[in-house]
Length: 290
Image (cartoon, rainbow, N blue to C red; front, side, top):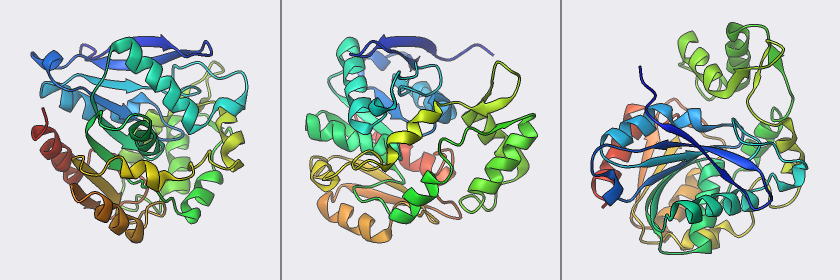
């Protein structure tokens, strides 16, 4: 099957070569507001493979950048630049290069934090957004769980071993997944390294700044979220999420009455966005936008 996207690169202000997938979209996509998909802490552009193809087929350009230290993007020479404000600055450079003035965001976890920061920097440019299992207040229990596995540098001899390890770490978040789904997740998040072992597709150094204030979850995100008041929005929450609480969801709804909540049953952090409930909500949002 022919590849449905172009592999492109842009250069950060500090000289890193960063990678993104560019799905051109069906005929007429150039006249519509593009979709930008922003991945989570340890993830990469493969997370949005099926969703991006689905959206592009409906006539929108879809851009899926990989943050520094992930996937095909360069690793930073020092770990201090692995923080949300730097990721936002990198994306702003891409927007400037591609002359993107308005966009629709799909942000998973860290990508949702980035979306709020992008809105705060320049209010009014978001046409709509999907926030995937994240909000302005992040639960400590979830952060501690993530801190327990990020940056450990494990590798595996086979894809089966990698899938079983993922199941051990994340099984409580996806209790109904079968082995094929864990294998699929392994191939989204790991790669075959030069020594033939299967390892995680990110720089282990991204874990180093997480303990510093503002790097796991930036301060004053409620203020940033207020920049999204009135913007058409879908909030997708895993029913078993330990990162996004019902109380935070209620407060978000008071600030943005345009927000539609979609709960994905029997799933924790974070839904894949390929679930029927999530896909239907995303389609509904996009169909109502220019």
